[in-house]
Structure formats: structure tokens, C-alpha cells
Amino acid sequence: MMAQVRTLEDRLVAEKTAGSDAPSELIALAHRARDRDTEATRSLLREIAPAVRRTCKGVLGAEHADLEDTIQESLVAFVQALPSYRFDGDITHYAVRIAFRATLHTKKRSLRWRDRFRLTGTIEDTTDYASSSPSEEAMLTQRRKALERVLGKLPREQAEALTLRIMLDFSMNEIASICDVPLNTVKTRLRLGKDALRRHMERDAVLRAALGGNT
Amino acid sequence: MMPVDTHPEDILDRIISDTASADDVRQFEEHASRCQACAAHRTLRPTARGALEPSLEDKMRNERAVSHAMNALQGGARRRSPPSVWMLAAAAVLVAGIAGAGYWGRFHAPPRSEQVGNSAPAGAAKKPDPQPTNPPDTAPEQPTEAVDLSPTPDKAKARALPSPETRETAAQVFADANELRRTGKDSLAMVTYRKVERLFPGSPEAEQSYATLGSLMMEHGSPQEALGQFDHYVERGGPLLVDVLAGKAGALQRLGRTAEERRTWETLLERFPKSVHATRAKTRLAELH
Image (tube, rainbow over all chains, first blue to last red; front, side, top):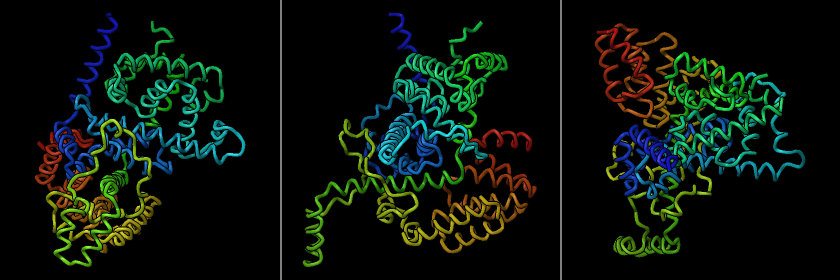
């Protein structure tokens, strides 16, 4: 019972925190966009596009071939999902949630194509930890791949929470708002996810080196 | 004493929001020295954070993405209209003349809607359109129609918009200029940005060029010329307005035009109170008072 009360409180806090930052102009635009006002839709998309790009770029990487397509798909999906928006949370987080889903969809699609054309080896083999690159983006790509390799072994919810936390640098309240779950759920997912990540890193020295763990 | 298996996520939250105390940081570092997962988080975070920072090009790309998304949404609305009826209506317009066109337009032509395609059922709406949208580097299929769907179109602006073919070329020259800038050939880049402004006035690329060229001129110690570029951009407005206002204020500062500089910082703060330039604006205004 106490746990339920705490969960509800946390959720209210999360929603309040998330909602308080949402500018009223954005909400007004969202209302008009939902009523199919073209100019309002365009203005709303301009406002949320940076957050959508940030999400897609954070998950896919700046060099991903499908980055721009995914951003456009996310924007379209966001407008199409406006009738489902309940106006009780941050609309930017709502857009991020949709972009995050679209981005994961793109990743799965990329992996399917890669699987189709790969003759030998495994997905893990494509991560070349040993190769060094002077470019920060290349280094980040390597680390992202290493992290994805571990996250692929975790339950989806934990993997998503860790991606939002580590790759997109969101706070716990923001993750709660984006995932539309209570704050305590986010805490649990992060704790379990990090426990699993730690176990994997403790067992695997190569992974530890790739992710910049303690030597 | 913090047990090793409790990840200090609350402290990380404060680190993320830049409100962590020295003690917070010390506690986190102590934990990270014993926890591989948090050590990895510590290593990955700055790199990931840096990669998430928006660039000038990102703002331009966002504009393009919004434009393509709007086209896709409008295209979706058109797809719902039966094509055969569309074709029949068009044929009738040709054969029967204006009167016939009026009749078919009223009863059969697809609605020239001012609405975007968000009429999908709520339950089915959450999935992104599985069909890929236009590639980012190509012109939209119906750019002019898409632009004109505004309920209160700015006719003069619409007339000034270049044709799709021209826009493609503007994008190409603009990309060349960006590439020159990226490779450190600033003088050539400046010439090329000027070319975009001269050959494609009114295009999004030309508008962006005023912002970028202004910044380059500032870097090369030409605040007077930079000011001209920034003023042009400010007059028209655009997605880079906040950055351009900051650039303009910087140019005025170098020129010693204090009163105008103060007004520019005040405008920036008034219009963009939460921008990344807000702190600098406040600091500078305090110095000027």
C-alpha cells in the first residue's frame, strides 16, 4: 500500500516537473495542430524538431545513413499521434517518446538488412574494439556499439532506460515522462540495468576497455 | 557509507542538471571507482553529450525535415482520395472548360484542404509511416503547394520562393560553401556563401548564408561587414535568430556601439529568455549598466 502511494506521489511529481516546463505556447500550438491547422502544425514541428533530432542522433549516431529519414518519420508520426496526446505531460517528451520508438524501429530494420547480407560472423564481430580512430565521433560510435551489444542482452525496458540515461543524458524524471511510467519504475529499471551492465563488464575485459570501465 | 551495489542515480541527476556539489561529485567518483557500470556511464556521458550538441547545420536540416514531414502529411491526405476520380475530374476540366471544372471541382476533386493528415484513428496513429520519406538532399515533390497551404499565405514571400530545381542548386552551392568552411578554406567559403546570397535570394540556403557568413566575418575580424550580414538575417527572421542576435551584439561590442549592443542583448533576452546565450546576455548587460 505504501509502495503504491509512493509510486503515485512520484508519478505526480514527475508529471508536475515535466509539465511545468512545457511552455503554454507549445500547448496552444498542439491544440491547433490537433485541429489540423497547417501553420500551427508547421510551427509545432519546428519547435520539437531539435529534441527529435537530438534523440535520433543520440541513438543512431550522427553518421547513420537513415538519420534524416528517421527524423522525418518521427515528425510525421508525432503529428499523427497528436489525437492520442492527453495534454497531461510535456509535449516535447511526448515527441521524444515517439522519436525514440521510431529510432529503435530504424535500428531493427538496419540490423535485419545487415543480417540478410552478412555471410559469416555475428553482430558482435562488427564492433572492432581494437581499431583506434582519432575522431571523437568514431570513438563514440565504437562505444555506442559496445554498449548496444550489452543492452541487447537486457530486458527491453531496462535497455531503453539505460539508453535514455547514458546516451541521451536524460534525468530520471525526464525518462519517467518520456516512457510514461512512474519515477520508481525508472529507478528500478536503471538499477537492474546497471547491475546487469556491471556483471557483463566484470566478466569481459574487452568490453570493459571498450566502455571505459575501471581497469 | 554507500554500498557498492547502489548506483547513485540521484547524484547523477544533479550532475546532469549542473547542480551537483563538490561532495556529490566526490561521492559519485568514489562509487564509480568500484562500479564498472557507473564508470562506463562517466566515460560515455561527456562524449555522448558533446555529440548531442546541435550544430548550425542541424538547424538547417531541421527546417528541411519539417518541410518534408509537412509534405508527407499532405501527401497522405491526397493518397486517401481515389486516383480515378482525380483523373476523371482533371479530364473533365480539360474537356468541359471552366464550367465543367467548377462542377467537378465541387463534387469530385480531392479537397484542397488547409489541414494536415492527422485524421488517422487515434489507436492506429502511433506507428511511424513505414514508407521512407523524401531523402533529405532532394527537393520535395510538391514544395510550392506545400508551402502555400497556409491559411494566411504570405503571397509576396511565396512569389520569392525559387523553383524546386533552383532550390536544389542552392542546396548544392550551399553544401560546397559548408564543405569549404569545414576544411578551413574560409576565404573561398566566404566567396561561396556570397554566391548563394547573390544567386538564390529568398532561398532558405541564402538566408542561412547570412548567418554563417556573418559568423565567419567575425572570426576574421570584420565586425562591420558581419553586422551587415546579421542585420539582414534579423530583418527576415529564421530558426537561427537567437544565435544571430548574439552575433550581432558581439559585432556591435567590437565596434564600440554600446547603446545598440545593449538593445540587442535586451531583445535577445526578451525573445529568448531560456536560450544558451541568456547568461552571456545578462553578464554583458550588467557590465554595460
